[in-house]
Length: 423
Image 1 (tube, rainbow, N blue to C red):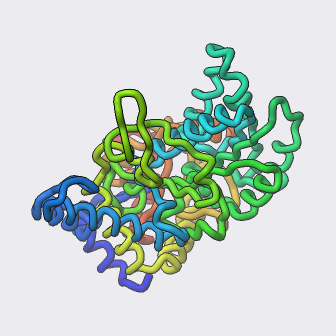
Image 2 (cartoon, rainbow, N blue to C red; image 1 turned 180 degrees about the horizontal axis):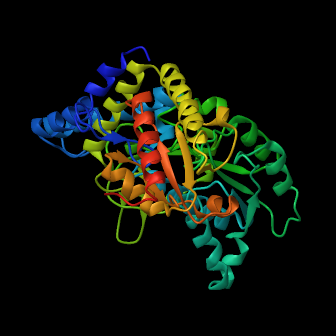
């Protein structure tokens, strides 16, 4: 990275100067001091509500909030700031798009099918399941809701390919008027980065709407939404060194006519009476009520933090450390890594330990001051694909070094030697 690793680590008060090793950045990243200070400073100056009132506090809040939107636009290379919609998080963003698209299908009087893969997070499965399941309860809905879920098969290493997407698109089309492809840019279990531009291209050739879950990749690799070409992209602030409670949905301009806000309220209404209301233009239409103003300020500064490091440098650091993590774990005979293709991984390796329960491994590591995640990581389908119920996951951030990986390996060796029982 363009900034020395010790300087980077010094920005994180939760971990700097402590013996603890944090290897759970896929769940949430730690927060740099500059982000924490920016939110405190904004609140200390006096909080006003955005796009309301004429006083200085409200004007200041509106300016900071819209500056944050512009910062996101630049970071992901969107063409217009209006293509950036703030949400409470990636999960809320996927739900928003799922309900929005299905309302549009209702208006158009067509149905379709949703294509998802075994590599998806539950947040990119359950919202679509919910809509499809309504078919059994609402006969009228069968004319417009997605009529089925279709599986896109992942490869042995956990990756997605053009041929797999194309195969799912070519299956018999029962009411297949509008396919929707909803896929992850990077698995939160294997760390495999998918060739999104290629996958989106083959889907759009078949007339599919495309949604990409970029929650894991956004802090590890430069994103260019125009290069990807997807209709919608979602990610969360807390996985990119920002605060919790804020996420982003990018919707390309050409798709704006095909979406409809699934909820309404103050701030999203241009005109309202007892018998009718007229919605505001996007993005305000999709941000009713009081939005996450303080969190938007923090997200803006988190982007500044990443830009200062340089996303190319962040990716290089993460890729090199990922390979070291993979090879170090692979050197332990009792450790079984989920998936292959270490060269495609970016910051995540999940594994099991022969003869020791995942929870016991996690507890042992915690007592050795190494923080990892255990369980199914809200991604049960891919664990079933690999023939396990869950795993231990080590995930990297910009603050991690080979020292952290070595600490994990030493603790694992001790865990294996003692059968998972800590003294």
